[in-house]
Image 1 (cartoon, one colour):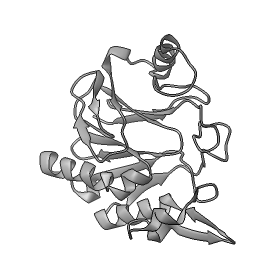
Image 2 (cartoon, helix red, strand yellow):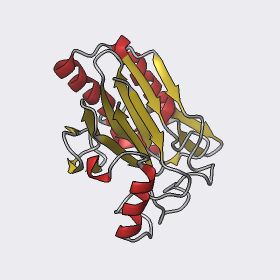
Image 3 (spheres, rainbow, N blue to C red):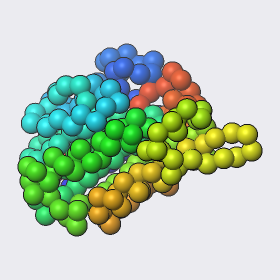
Image 4 (cartoon, helix red, strand yellow):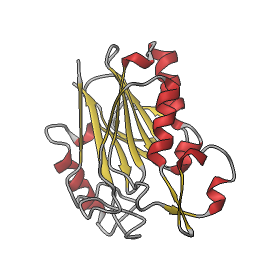
Length: 218
C-alpha cells in the first residue's frame, strides 16, 4: 500500500461550521474534492482545538477531536484549517497514518506527540518510519500575538519581536517537536495562508471557509 494526499482547491470551502456556503454546497465541494473516492467513505471530525486523536474506521463524523488515525484502504480522512497547520504523519513501513489539526493550542497540548504515541503503541511505528507533511498555515510574517500567549515555555522558541509587536513562528516550534520525536523526513509547504489569497485565513477574513487536507491509504 501507499499514501495519497492532497489539498482542496483554492476557494473551495469543505466545512459545515464555517463560511457562508449552504450545507448542500459544502457537500458538493467535498464530493468535488474527493477525486475518485466516494463521500460515504470520508471521515472527519468536529474539531475543538484539543489533543484528542480518534481512529477513523468508517466514513462520516467520527467525534470531537483534532486527529484521525487511518489504517485501512478505502477511508479518506479530512482535516479542515484556515490558518492552523494541517499535519500528516505517515508510517511508510506499516501503512498507517495520523492526520492532525494543529493550531497554537494543538502545539501547546502536543497533539503531534499524542498522534505518534498511538502509532507507536498500536502499530509499532518508529520515528525513522514517519513521513511528515505540513500544509499551508499562518506563518511568522503575519501571526501577531499578545504577550500572554507566552505565559508558559511551550511557545517561547517561536517568539519574535518586531518593534513594539510580538509575532509567533509556530512552524519553528513544530519543527522543534518533530526533532524531539526523531522525525527527519519532513515536507513543509512554504505558503502563508494569511499572505496568500489562494487560501482561507481566519486572521485575515473572519467569516471564511476552510481548506481541506485529504489523505488515504491506497
